[in-house]
Length: 194
Image (cartoon, rainbow, N blue to C red; front, top):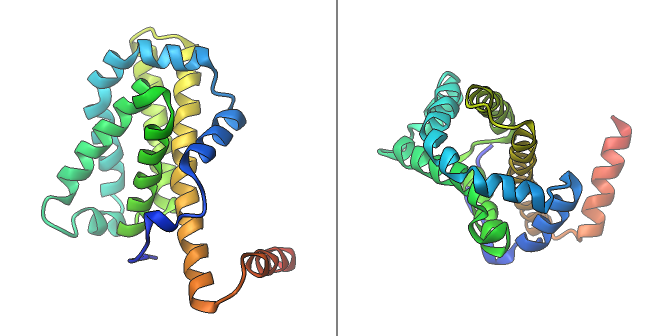
């Protein structure tokens, strides 16, 4: 499902607050952040390989291949964005603060806009996490770094998932005129009936 219209300004979450919640939930510690920052040069070095792994995997799916190649140069732009994203997980941009959170929110919205759904992103992220773990072993990097990278990957994945939820919810509310409370009650009732 491709949702064509969204507004960043009307989001119902504040990216920095969402980031703080996710940091707490996955227990990303200051030690984790230090390990990631120390490994940033290594992360930058392997980022292009991880982008290749990600897009090679997605490109084997007929639906994703069509999305990735829908416009001239899209796959090249996405590849470069992935390289930047991957490196930023190590640097944290601004110590995993407001700029980091806002960029992750924007990345989530782009996934929604171009139609890369959770059913594609989650398995592709798993492929990347496994590939990174292999690279970590080959480079004799610590298990603690592997754990830290896994935590920040899950935070970034949560932003993409949340973007889908927020955009979908807002679209339903706008089209129906329902309140947020009614919408949530209908979802809970529907889930209970399944």
